Image: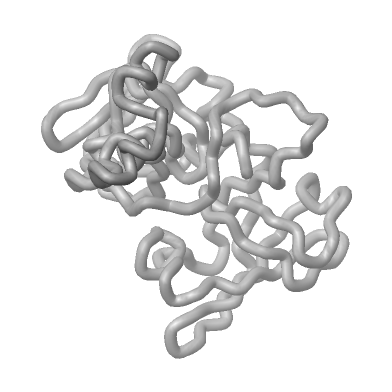
Length: 215
């Protein structure tokens, strides 16, 4: 589990392409301070497992499903990526619940300056937009951000200068594709509400129950 608070920007050093998979070698420093084999590191919001590491790099396998569902397939040598270690039990919860399981991709269709803030408008497919709500949370390339506006086919976020500076938002261009992960809470609530009638009778969790307690 992650929080969407990027710890550093890493650099893709090499991509070993398989038939339906790939092995990434990523240059990094901070996320390797306490690294161990098998650790989870979010790379542009995708949870990957450390398969080897040195003082300034680590490698990770990327499977067919991940390449199909995310924008990792568009990475090249020297591409810069957002990195975050899995959340420590004793750590601060600075962002929101981010699983590192990308729901799909969106396209940056507009970037505009608004005084000190920068607005990014992202075009996204209906299966992703259905879980996006104004003032809710969204992970874009692993960055925990607050949704400012939503339309029938887009949503926008407004990023503060610190977030832009500390992440790859400072380098992103219009037309680029980004990883999107919806707030997982909305998906769980929908699943619970859609239980078959016989299952609902067995459970005390109802739509009224969820509304009563703020869901």
